[in-house]
Image (cartoon, rainbow, N blue to C red):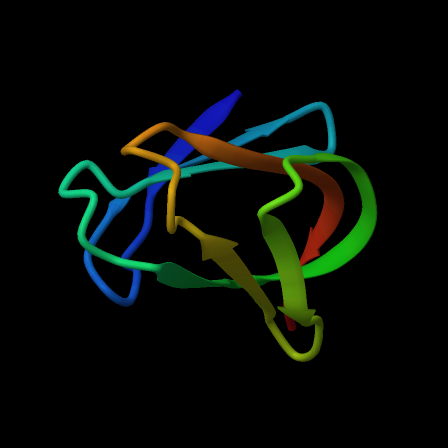
Length: 88
C-alpha cells in the first residue's frame, strides 16, 4: 500500500491510502473551528464503496473533489473509500 499526505482548504489533517485498487481518504479538523473541508485528489472517482454521511464527492472530472462537513464532528476523523484511477 501507498500513503499520501494532501493539502486541503482550509488546513486539516488529511491522509490518503491506496491499496488493492481502492482509495481511502481520512479527514479531520483537529482545531474544531471549520464547518467544511474540501480536498482535491488527482484521481477520477469510481464507485463509492463506503462513506461517512458527512462526506460527499462534489465533482469527479478531471479530478475528484471531496467535501467533508466537519461542523459538530468535534475533531473526529471522517472517511470515504472508493475505486479510482489516476487522472490523465
